[in-house]
Amino acid sequence: MDPVLFMLVFIRVSIIMMFIPVFGSPVVPWITKMGFCGFLALIVASSLNTDVSGLGNGELFMSIVTDFLMATAVGLIIRFIFDGIQLAGEYISYQMGLTVMNVIDPLSNTQISIISQLKQLLALLIFFIINGHHYLIKAMVSSFEYIPVGSHVVSKEFLKEIIIISSRIFLIALKLSSPILVAMFVTNVAMGIIARAMPQINIFMLSFPIYIGLCLIIMGIFMPFILRFIKNEMNYMIFNVNKIIQLMGS
Image 1 (cartoon, rainbow, N blue to C red):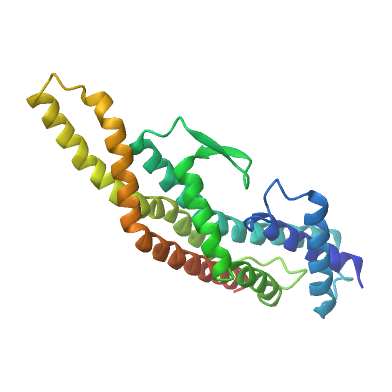
Image 2 (image 1 turned 90 degrees about the vertical axis):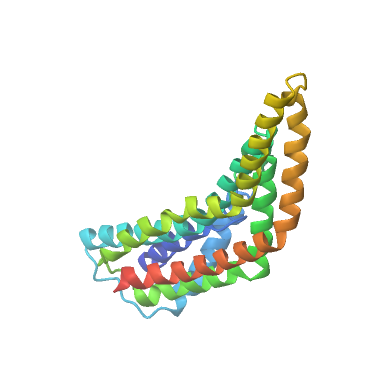
């Protein structure tokens, strides 16, 4: 096997795999990550009928840049949906007054709110239930058909598409948190009216358990819709990954 071909395949495979949930987590040892990426790259490279021996240094460099751009674009699309779900959790936690109660996210090794952690775990569960990791690996393998190893032709349309897809972070966050935001707005108006009508009541202390209890009840009521929405977004993410790969190869 040509070592240059294996290196180019390994670069593309490893960058994409670093963005896949759980596998790209700091918790997973680097030896495990590199070993799996190397094994996957070996399988893909052995199935390719591409001759890269005639590539010069400049063409080889441009091919590496193309692989890096393509893999990063695919990885960002994967991260957009999970970041949008985490942002929705931050919105809800802020409304519930739980922003100071953060926990360590084992996937990113950072502190996030409790509600963000809950929604992230739900998103991960749905991701694996619909075999999202299988579809992403399949899309990664098919990328070698649309963007052959050694090519350095990238369509300009994919940059525009990445920007459009990135805007869905805020759309996802707003849709997931909208029931809580609306309920908290109505509750705040009601609390303001009570505070004006009965000043002797300590509304500030009374509002904390009301906010938390009301948010939990609303989340429980809308949970089936939230799960269905996350599932649809996961399917749309897989569709966008394939679309970006085809746009870059067109």
